[in-house]
Image 1: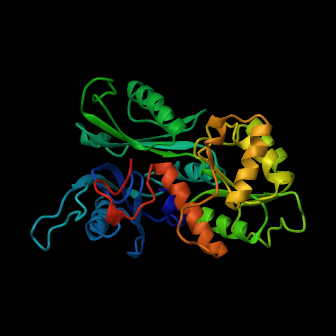
Image 2: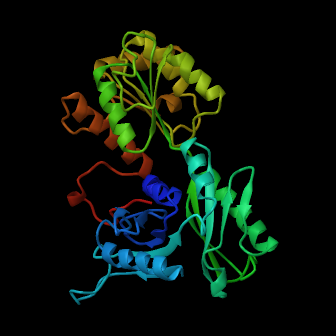
Image 3: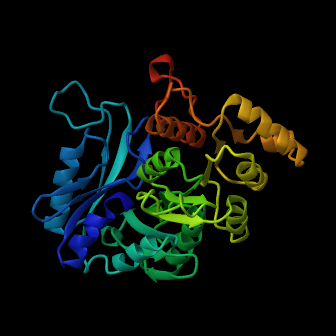
Length: 372
């Protein structure tokens, strides 16, 4: 929902009603992940996507019907058949779409959800998408680590879903949970989609150079909350990095150590060291490579610079296991030359590390396109 939240909130705040179709479950090679949404305004305007084009028209109609009737609907779309007019996914995947009407009356807590997301606070929305009692469908809970709003209909339901939703929220995962009709742990009769909205993952870019501006732009495009840090105030300015969320003037290793101390990084965080100057990057990498759970650490420089840097880091006491976490020279081999092309190669390596991709042309691979 985050990708369409701005448009949805405009409708919600104006007192209007939007039809919203959300991917709640996927099988095989589905094109969009759980949580991807399409919003249809009362004038027919569309934002967002649930399938990259395959079933958009059908979901559009489903969302409009939900707005007109006020009845939420769970619909499955599978592989299209030989009928040229059949609705389905040509990629061979299967998706479940939950369509509902959203307004201030049907979802009064949406403003609070948007506020949590805007201020980088974790929040989950648990919605009943299927139930043996049709009147239960569409009920929801808004869940944070400290608070719960709404109800699914009984204390037993709420207690079971809140516990499980907080686990998913901590992991940053969205998925469908199955219970008995009254929230029994074992049984069937109720399906609940938990949409987790964890804070945006962080990208820390060290070194206020022209390559950093291009990397910051790529990071912002990929959905990261981007911080650029450099000790030189003449270079570390917001004017030079307009796409960064924040620009920090501080010695890089000091800033990173403070972020570690504040527990401000997690397994989704990425660190790009672009200074290629030993007085900056060696102390910085001493800190970075000892962070146990950061997702990616890359450092720019020639192979000669890399070899010199590794020797300095070994002399500082880093182990081979710690050094093995360093992606250096940074980026995939795309033949990049310009700062913008280099930023694409760095972004490509980050994506490959995150999802286990090999960085090879898809035409030279077999099996699934989308990695789990």
